Length: 354
Ligand SMILES: *Cc1c(COP(=O)(O)O)cnc(C)c1O
Image (cartoon, rainbow, N blue to C red; front, side, top):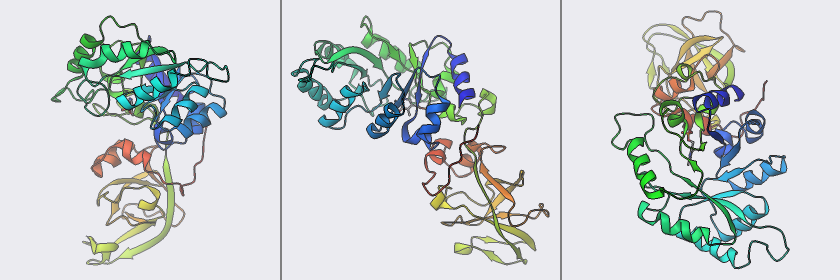
């Protein structure tokens, strides 16, 4: 994590970094991220309960709440703990307006003013105010006693793909036009933009997936100098011999074309391994690359041991991570590294190394 953070730092040396730690730090564990990203300028996430944990654990630097308040009660917590909400809809504006009636100093005399982020919808069309409303909203926020400062942000749909129908340059041009002259810090770049859009200057970046050592697309993680932060590991718990014509597992989707040795790995979709990973998905046994066979089941999956005569019960299995990029497994399973990381379930034992 530290090393990947340095990659983000050197890609945009003048840019402060919001390390994105939503979804339990993309499945890596929020407390591991707290240590790994100690050098980040701020942490950014969605979940209020987790943000409060970060404060309780002593994170005193900024925290951005990327979807802001979900209900009015959230705002009081954000004020009390100096969490910076992204304001992206009228309902949130109304919550701030209501809190402003109490003044920047609440009834208890404690400073309740907060820093907020105004989200601009530049074409992603998930969150944010239409460009034509941004000035008006900015002025509204600026007039609220509870708002100490306003930053501006937008999010790119396709920073990793120069062939995409909506390019970052188009989104950026729109963003610049509708925010020109507004006094605000900007945060723009996700991982793909940090790694690939070098001419895009802003005050802050918001990298996520790259900090965990996976690629956002547009090149392999290794080509960007990233190292996997997570290794998903298990072991062989059984070895079986198949004769020519034997079937394997649920649905009997794999049939042996010749006699072969196979192994059973204690890992399945109840651990977060993708059920849709087909026969041929890469996997390491004793550090050697082989392939998944047949259908992944809840608690187990099978692997080809034909070329691994030394492998047996107890042999170490790496499903992704050290020696096997998560992006390769994701591609075989028709998904992205992001989804695999986030899908690790609570029953998987976490071991923090290093
Ligand atoms: C998740 C998220 C990011 C991080 O995206 P990566 O592709 O993981 O770098 C940045 N900004 C926002 C608003 C996000 O929701």
